[in-house]
Length: 111
Length: 117
Image (cartoon, rainbow over all chains, first blue to last red; front, side, top):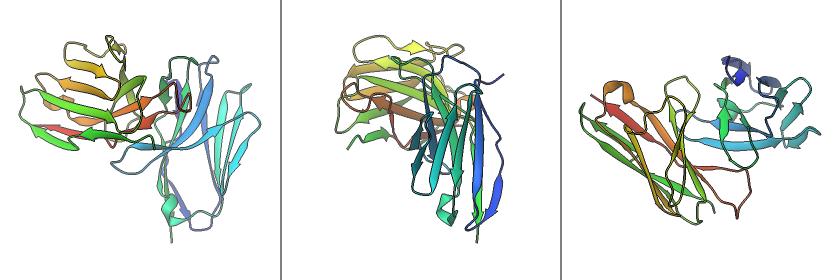
């Protein structure tokens, strides 16, 4: 079983739609959680960190449920430029900095 | 700030040759550098972690004699793919972190696309 699991999609949505991605992680010792965005043939870029209290950055809202080992990302009012692969990422131990990446969920926003 | 470069961005080489990829932190000193590999439609897989001046720590299943990592300074790490074969064709990405910046954040290089013919 993969340590970080995501539905690869693709999710095809019209502009303006709200879309939600989910991610589960298997290691209860995971310490920190992130969503990264990766465009085709490019490096991943940090989108936002994820906290148990939930956090919002503009149209993006991330949530962590430690009890269920579940992370979510909500994108409101989708834009064409949101089309990308969204990577769920966890760190296992606080002092190693090692990131464990999920496979990614592909989003295609259509006009 | 916190820019990481990689060179070359693309390389095509013949089977059996060795290829060196450079990863540089341009405006900060990298306490730790990481090397990842990504095959098409797959996740980034961590290959190794390196700290300046010490030997790299390789992930399980990664051959240290095939993927040589040198982290000679706080701003430069190199990955050499020795005796490359077509199955080594992949997207290689480095990242760097610093104890003096946001603790858990890694700054990624733009990646190197290796094609072995």
